[in-house]
Image (cartoon, rainbow, N blue to C red; front, side, top):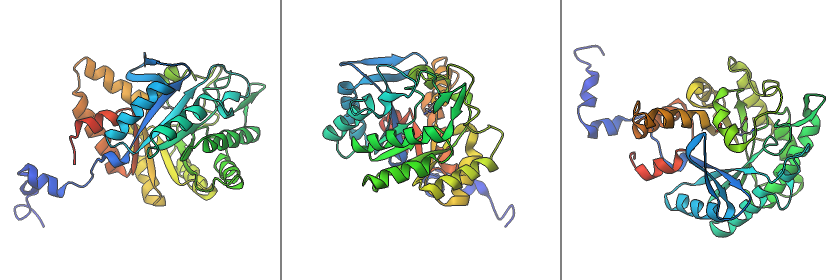
Length: 325
Ligand code: PBG
């Protein structure tokens, strides 16, 4: 059908009509709120690089998570900041590690919140790398054992889902096997499958104190120029047992979100990372952008690209705004 029989503007004439033909919908159901948890009591310290995002001790985090629950947010993603770092990142799998204690407390106080734990070493190792380092290199296969140990300790503390973000080869298979052998066959895995070596993580690295002490992460995270390779990573993770696959970052990687959904049909999570958050915060504090409108636009576009789930530091704000249906 051609103009003048076809007039695209007919269906744009009122908000009611626009609502009826709207294709992508942002819903609170698809949001995951990330949190940083630290040792201590009564801590609620704002991250310099991420205005509005805080370090919480377990007691203050519980209050936060209760509020998130009341707002209708179904899931949270936890990052731990340890007391001390060492070569093996030993607090990452300790029974009394910050994450293990936080998960147990959250599950005790807010049992129906879905608790997801970031499974990685970089916050816990002296090197700041996501695997074990020897002679200046990140060693793959030995790191797998350690990552499986972390995932297992997180599952044992009550995590519903683990989210390996290290990008070692074979980690999903190793983690799935370890979980199954220890009777955690119901613990799900959301894999950071297409995780790029991105500069958008800088605010997070300052907030979580996990920047690599030498070199960078390009020997394990994806080259930002590649998409076929990302699809290989995603397929491999699915074969190894991932339940949800993730693309990270989100905003500049919408093509990957689209391909991941189209080519696998699996649940796809998109991580709108710290740099995306802080960029919007900075621009809106200068009044260059309207924060609420830009956040709702970007998140809707991430949905439109094909994401089922969005991890965003704006999750609570979005839930408060109720500006969508
Ligand atoms: C840990 C991890 C990082 C992020 C999530 N998990 C940092 C990194 O890979 O350097 C980044 C999240 C964000 O920027 O919001 N490996």
